[in-house]
Amino acid sequence: MSDFHQAGLISTLHLLGSVDLEGLEKELLRHVKRRPIARVLPCLFSEPAGDAVPIIVEEFKKVDDIDQIVLSMDQMTLDEFKSSASFFSQLPQHLRIFWHDGPEMQRLISELDENELSIGEPGKGRGSWLAFGYVLATQRAAVIALHDCDIVSYNRELLARLCYPIANKSREYEFCKGYYARYGRRLYGRVTRLFVTPLLEALTRLTGHVQILDYLQSFRYPLAGEFAITTGLVRANRIPGDWGLEIGTLCEVFRNCSLKRIFQVDLIENYQHKHQEISPQDPDRGLMKMAVDIADTLFR
Image 1 (cartoon, rainbow, N blue to C red):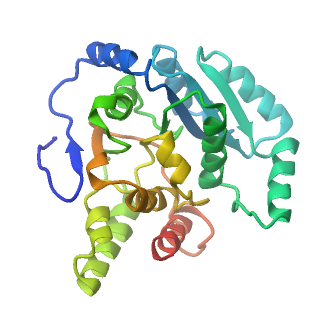
Image 2: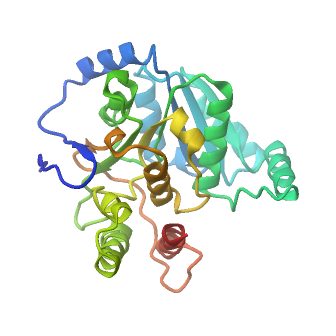
Image 3: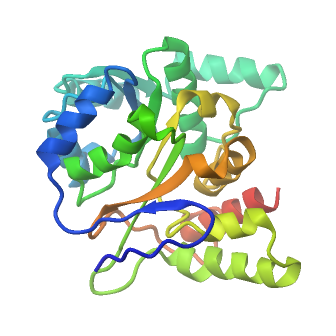
């Protein structure tokens, strides 16, 4: 069940009732003529074989408001890269695939390391940073929208609701963070509920109402992997290279953007995706790795 409560330092766009998707997409198509959209998709080779990616691809084939798609792919051999390229070639948009394990990308990463410009360990953050850089270099887009490739409940409405407020130049927003409910037979969003929210509350009790803490607590789901951002703001932000991507991006947006240009949007009634294992004994895997990276990013 949705709500219409406005709280905290940022605006919230709620999901109230049914959405006229056809009308929303028609209006979005008009706006993207002035503010083209690039979609950045962090993806593992194993994901196209799962349930989510085929759904996402079919939904993308139905939309005309995305100019460019950049796939940021890790953990692939040459044969797997060719297989992925063949699978995603059915997309009608301008498509580029970043094969981070490929020889050309490895040479680039090694050259950066040799010149003391390390971009971090392999992962979603590093892959997104490289993909953002490519989008900026091509100058085809004014807006970048990012989401994961493991969303089993994906539909075009999620895509349109994430992109529309940023693409609509009259709104003057620069950053949109998605949020949603996650429930089934149990509650999910464990790292948010059991780690990030209590940590922010504890820090507020310790330091008082510091603006950045109040700002972070304004987000319904700060670890949601979906956001849209203007290319100008991307250029100014420092992008964390690990699981700290989401919380680090929020902190960078706070540093570089006026609060009145930041908002969050309710994307979908019930969000389902691949769940990580907890791995309580191994801080280099699963939810433990995520919690360590988030804490490191937040305190840094």
